[in-house]
Image (cartoon, rainbow, N blue to C red; front, side, top):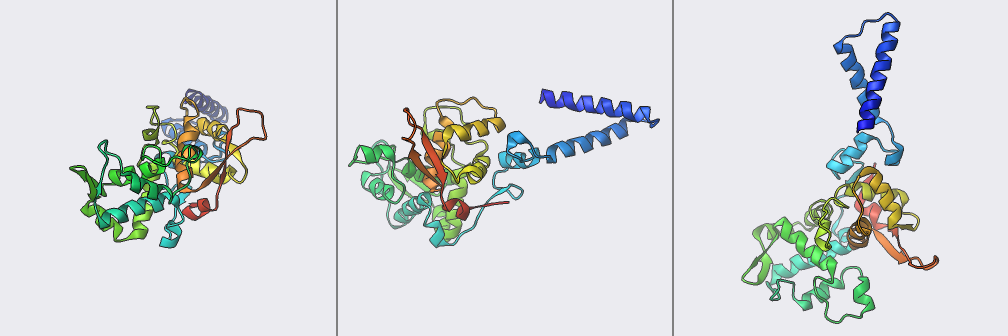
Length: 292
């Protein structure tokens, strides 16, 4: 910002000098008009560090993600398409289960193991569960199930009373319109749930801030396998936040985008170890989102 202000001051001084040399008077009103023109040009011009986006476009993605002026829009879909989205399927499964009966939570407040197992198999496989052949799947291991639980809790669609989980009146009303409920589940998973809830790092800015830009980058670059480091470098040019232990890639790509089914993940064993995870977009990305 300091460099920007210095550049603006320099340009204004050069403009004043040129106007006065041409015999034109310069007053406060003319300076303000010129400054306004400069700021409009600056805010609407493509920037290399923003991958060709302007500051105005980037501001919308950072501070009003998926809003009316954002370059990334969340689509409204028919129910059959929503049911292709793993996280949505898992979340609606919890709602539909609670619509039929209450669930008795474990003594530590987690969803019961039988339900977790059923819900987990509706979503995408989790590496640690599959490689260890876990027979008892806990909610804190099946993180997508945990995400579905948190989403409904934060939305106020479920309640816990005396160890029993049930739908609220608000949740029952939401379930009466599955399409609208599914759309809200996606929106809230993107902007309502702090992705820091699933790791030990307390910095809640990494990944949460600029989530629409992360979706935009996946659409732009995701046709080829790319590392989390690749996306992180682009992200940090926009969001000036120190990175800690690949938290950005873990939060955004390994968890949220994977749970939504918009990325595939592979371990690249064609390079020397340590092997890096790589990501590639799926067809679901262009179904869930529109890019203008």
